[in-house]
Length: 420
Image (tube, rainbow, N blue to C red; front, side):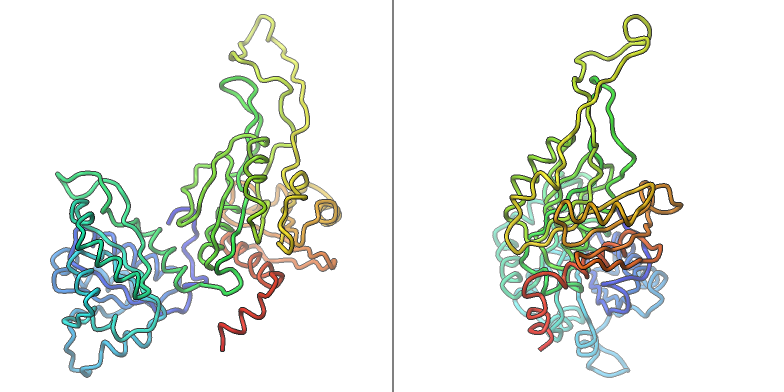
């Protein structure tokens, strides 16, 4: 799963997921999907259609979930298996969803265990289409997909890419398991405080060119900002991620805006900030850049034997865009310090007008840059300091967004309405 630690955690932990698998070649990916969901702490009930069993066996799914696999509507346990599966499910995902399945589901058919379970459930349903690109483009298939959207089903994919052997590379490819896991997470983790809101996040390093092949930068991977972006999307937000150079895949469902320099990041944030209900400045922006970038590579020897580098200050992305923040919006900053962590962090919180600041020490083992875990302290405007234990950056992201949810205007009213 790209950029994510597979350990039991929210929103999957302790939740019941029905995974329906229909008869397409992409069914081989569904075994990995079942495994990933299980490792994240979900209880996965797999339902295989008759045609799905031509591509993947029940034993494969039993091996990765540790649970029985269901293949028939009829059972000695009683004729209401579909009622139990549908009633106990927190989410239902169908992957792959073939053209035949889309047609049957759109018509409200109930001729096998999977379609009857869909009629019996009131849980959110995610369908992941997978078929030949010409089939996907057919008006009948598009009409069936539109009908399922009218019924409230969420559609994940399809993607464009290599299809079955000898076929084209058009739209029709099922999403990868890690992407579908995130769609299931969005179905499970919808948060009234974030639904319908726009979240702007900066992430990663910036690079400042010395010459065409060298740059000034830092060791940030972007993992913390990317984890925040993915977690905010799972909660139902519209997320825009302004990212410096990073090897991480774009978070699923997130609009990624790629930049390289601090000045490019500043302009991207300026253009997006006024629409943001929440802004999170997690990027490690280079404080300085060369006053002049050379247009040719510096060579050893000659005039460049001992080059002198003259630096100038970069813009402060968070401070220089403060006046563009929307009224009532919530702003979160990050502080990475080598000494006097809380003192410097409190000064930054005040100087830049943050509502919340995430402070973490540089150089600590298993925290900060180039690590999948982090140890942070959350500072509020009221002066409270909440120290969190060492944990995955995905877990840190959830904790940060929990605090943001408490600060959002009307969040408590929305939460109360959702529970009533």
